[in-house]
Structure formats: C-alpha cells, structure tokens
Image 1 (cartoon, rainbow, N blue to C red):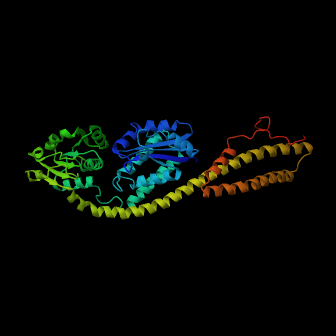
Image 2: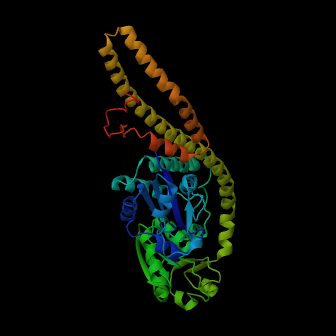
Image 3: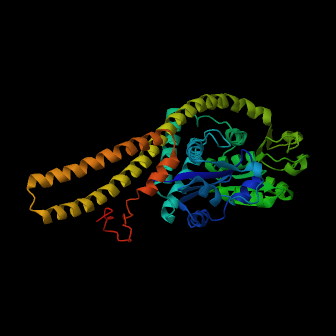
Length: 428
C-alpha cells in the first residue's frame, strides 16, 4: 500500500453557494474516473454535497496529485479553494465525517454521504487501499464522535429550529411546507422538513436554479419556484419558513390573508410582515423566538467538538503511523525480495563452479549457503534501519527512492542485458 493523498475542497466555509455549485460535478462517478485516468494517479474519490465539492487522489508524488487537481474548480476564485497535502487530507476527511466542517456542527447527514462516496468509488474501480483506509478511518472517527460525545444532540441551526418550532404548533405529517430562500438557512430548513414527514415542499428563491438545487437535495416531493410565486404558494402551505436575504418583505399581510399557516421568519430584515400575525389562522414567529431554542444546544455541541478534536488528533496520528510503517515495510520487502533473487542466482553459479572443481560435501554446501545468507543480512541491515527511521521522520522521498531502487518486479541484469546472469568478475 503506497502513495500519497492530495485533496482539494470548495465548501461553504470559504465559497459562496454559486461557487460550490459550479465546482460540484454533475456526475461524481465520471469525475472520479477522469481523475483516475490522469497520468500518475492511482486512486481517486469525489465527494459532492450541497455544501461542498471535494476530490482526493493518490499518486506516488504530491506534485503529481496537485497537477491532477489543478483544474478541479476552474470557475472558483482562488481564495475559496482549499488544497490539502497527505496528512492534511486525512485530517480533513476525519473532520468532515465528524461534522466539524458542516454548516450545522455535528450534523448526521454527512457521514452517510462520505460512506456513499466511498462505495461509489469502489464500484467505479477508482478506490484503492490508501484512500479506502483513510475513508474507513474517517467514518470510524465520525461514528465515534456521535456515539461518544453530544456533537449531534440538540437543535443548533436556525433552519432546523424553525421547523422544530413550527412542528409544535402544526401537524407536519402529510403537510405542504414552504421555504423562502435557498441559502444556508433555507437549505437546512428544507432538510429538516424532509425529515419531519411533510408531504410536499416548495422552495422559493430569487434565483430559481439555486432553489432547484435545494429541491434536488431532499427526498420529499419538492418544487422550485421564483419569489414572485411565493404568495400563491403560501396560501397552500401549512408551515412557512422564511430565510431570504431580501431587503424588503417577501410576504405582506395581504399575501397571507385567508391562509392557515404557522410562519417562522428567521430573515434579517424580516421576510414576513409582522402584521400578518394578527390574521385569523396565521401565526408568525421571529428570530428572537428561535435564538432561545438554539443557544443551549450550541454550547453543548461546542463542548463536544473539543472532545472530537482530541479524538481526531489521536486517530490521525495512529493512522499516519500505520501508513508510514506499511510504506517502509513495502520498501524493505522489495529490497529483501530483490536481494534473495540475486543471492539465489549467484549461489547457484558459485556452487556449480565449485562442483566442477570437485564434489562438495553437504557440510561444504551448507557453509557456502550460510555465507550467502550472512552477507545479505549484514548488507541489508543498515538500509532497513534507515528506512524505518525515514518512516518515523516522514521522509517519504527516501522511502520512495528505496522502492524504485529495490523494485521486487525488476530483474537485475548483467552488462549484456541478460536478466539471469550476473556480471563476471574482471579478469576472467
């Protein structure tokens, strides 16, 4: 198991929704296969969600990995693209699977998305031993984080809290829900409605393509419309969560007159005219109501996150040590295999010559063979020690050079190019 991981990420932490959308490949399988087909790339995997687009490759050299990923997000500004080296990729994958990199700290959906990306790469033939071990470790850490800490307990996002508050006053089973806005909070509200049992979801946004992206991200029957269609959609909805960035109200009191809906407005400035709360059948909650709901859970998850960070440090160091040992052991194994082949050839030639000079006793043959074994062991002891030290010191160049020099698949050839004969000593 050899190779180094190189990664690239475009996520909500630095990029806009439009930038994440432009970086996310329409077909993650095809994108991973294109990466795997590039020169020097041995493995690849692509992780694409509504909040992140990431790709990882395994190459013999980090420079090859960076070159393979150089055009992963050509339309995204430089400051919104994050690159990772081998160790950084492993740590980032653990953070992603643990929910530390999510919009909602500790959210559960991402661990399933990491598993799905790994399984897709396995089916596509782009997953190899290096990425598989890193991804399995990331999933393991993510599962530990959720079973051993409170990282995913309590409602922490305004979007999901809005749905929770609405569910206290309206029956969401088989209901129609309306989400105004396709940004961070609108996306989280849509996901929360998806898990709350609504029958239908309408996502309204100024840019309809962004609303379509959110609608495609949920499993419930969902429709994307423009903001101009929001008043009509509100008349049919039982619950409304408003989270646009509009400067003026999207729904005024007249738009909701005759509706029967619980509305939760988490936009600043407000999306829903507060006067609508006076209408029969309409209830309007604002962001102050939600902040009281979420603050306790936020603190609980922040405390858990510190425990998860320590867990990642431990698991990260453990995996790196394992990978270093495995790579050094492979180089050492190749070195010994090559030496054993050379020893066998030379021993056979020497014994043949000695037999021609007179019959050898069994004891004499054993003495010659023991001499050959001793020479191999003594000659390889120093480089074996050096390779193990190189692994402990992250000296991948030394290990890679050793693997190239002692490739077990390469035969030692003599000066004339014959693979089964060693050079004759000078003077014969």
